[in-house]
Image 1 (cartoon, rainbow, N blue to C red):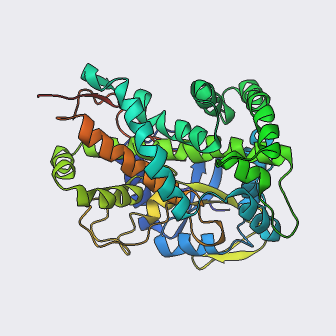
Image 2: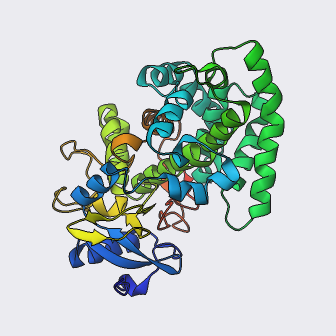
Length: 394
């Protein structure tokens, strides 16, 4: 393999914080060098796929670049076996079994009945105070509580579920991750048994009773998919929500437009998903010889699908480094592409829009009070650490 190309200041795309535009300058530098570039990644070398068309084609080739091998190594040991660590027919079957409530109609009904109420419940806790950290009090809370509501988990356990989700995939504390997985099981096991006996209109009941071609999810498979919803689904939505508010707080003129032009808000969400996606680079391991971006790639090669790079590819997006909600709508690769397109995309977009609507309604004069931790950072999962803000009369 070729020696890894130095990124901006020789940064490792897995280990370095890469705050704000640092990551995007690195991606632009690498993209200019070619469509497939060796880069440092968590102390080893990976091939970064830099351009939109090539990343999309890599997603499409699920046979040679399946998600299963990567997720079996990184997610399955803690979360358990789920559809994201499966491939082929098994993936298709378990995806259908595990995602019955993620259709657009079901998501719309959830938003109407529960999501808006939940956002305002969270804002009730701090809106009158006039200052706060929007990560700690909103973006780092709402997606986890929303999943709890969909599952039908008692509200008194909201904070437990969020705390355990934070620990599930924490590489710094593997023992804590195992303990968190066990605590999920201890809480959900009795509730699942009750839903098996008497189903209700919640996601846990849907998971317990879903059946396709005579196949149903066993108890441990249901629990594994619940852990996945928190560890992966809620986490990436939380990060995207933090990125959205970070970008808008840095652009007061767009925040003002969003307040006065409600029809602009869906475009602000879509443009955020292009401009600052919560997953910047997605690892994939090749399982057979293939060609990527016109080059031969051997089996066992670690590739990075450069989602954030592809979403700013100037060959696809005009003026790509500008956050512009007025640009014509275009497809983005934030939720993947092809057979493994994220089934939670509808819910994620709905949550981002609900949070934005409520913030604009309840926090007049919203403005940043500190840049400390406010820029999204990370080369894989990407989000701000804090969003210190004030509201009310300036």
